[in-house]
Amino acid sequence: MEINEKREIISNFIDETLREIPNALNAYVSDDNGKFSKRREFNEITQYINNFLEGKKRKRFILLPGIRGVGKTTLLFQVYEYLLKEINVNPDQIIYISCDDLNDLCDCTIREFTEIFLEDYHDTTMRQLDKNIFLLIDETQYDKKWTTSSKVLFDRSKNIFILITGSSALTIEDNADIERRSVNKEILPLSFSHHLELKYKIQIKEKQDILTNFIITGEIKEIIERELELNNTLMNNSNYTNLDWKNYLYYGGFPVYFEEEDTKSICNDIVKMTRRVVKEDISNMKNISEDNKTNANRILRYLSMIDSADVSMNKISKYLNTAVGNVETILGLLEKTHLIYHLEPYGSPSLRTRKARKYYFTTSSIKYALSSKIGNNIKDKNKFEGLLIENMVASKLFKLTADYDDLTLFYDSNNNGNVDFIVKEEFGKIIPIEVGKNKKNTKQIENAIKHYKAEYGIIISDNRKKIEKKGNIIHIPIKIFALL
Image 1 (cartoon, rainbow, N blue to C red):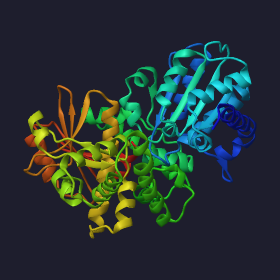
Image 2: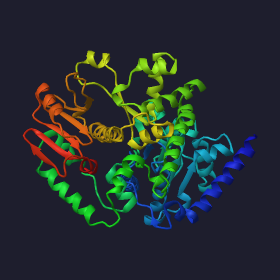
Image 3: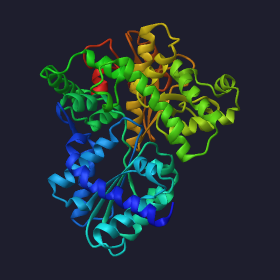
Image 4: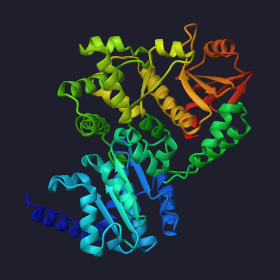
């Protein structure tokens, strides 16, 4: 393709985007039931924008990585609407780009696109730009040179605000230049409270500090007050039913499926999403063979069928007929896409090296969808639901400890009656946590409290109707924990 022809194609694409998106915006941010609720990240992003407009331009490059279906594109269009309708930014100063669409037209980088946009519509260059421009860039993984382009855009003009989404985080995490310049805000699958907030407009604001303080101190007064508040909120909302908890556990986490009533279709779509992550997202970040793409899909299916405690590199290696080192590489790539994550065993550094890791899915619905698609080999429904609950609790604790520098999450590797999780406060206490469906026996948590010389232990189960403390054991209902 000649340079002039390529430029004309890009210029026409920009013209179409500037002309059509403002007029069609309502279709992207609402449906027949009204405006889509906004993810909590929306307020953080708009605060960065407001600061930018006030002249505070250090944090003007925001990255929103996350797996497919969590609402990143809708979030971009909601930001577009905010710029256009709430703070009255001129339409020609806002440009939305889908790198997927752009890639279908021609080989064009974000930098080239922006240079043509500034030249054609603002008669300027990046260095000479004297007005604020907002670039909303979607599906950035389709531009293999996006990191270089973003660095140039950031360095050459303080008047360009860059908001980027991507389906995976590998390139972001591995690029020091981008890390240094950007704010990285991962868009995760929805928590249960966030699910209710977006789907039913039930205002349940997560108060993570309450959960963190409870885990660290074992004090239950504040968390009981929060429990009463949550129960009153749900009881006074006619949209919520008790069935929604199980629907969330099995099929939740992805706002894109809110209007889908066919649960089989939801499972099929989640499976397709995981395959697309393997086929496209990993390939866009790292060259891997077709055999290893197949291996990656098989590893995901394998993890979905087993108890998280059964993960063994040697077992997977034999299952796939490939080297252990190759299995470790594939698992590392899958973690970078945020489909899965791992926990290490609690203990000394040498023990953590010797013992196997435990792997969990980023949301329980991925585990269910993958296992149901190929025939779940765990025939006990209660046992399998218990595994989904364990996955949900692990994900919530993983996020909490990742956000709080003084806490680390492990699995319990003690062979003599271990519990599910150990939360370790840096230079401080150990908190054993047991999770289970119909969990009535307290022997495991009692053994863990004694073994680790812990002040108290926590049981998260559906065996209690409310939070209560019996001696040095604290019981929390599963649904309440999910809402905290």
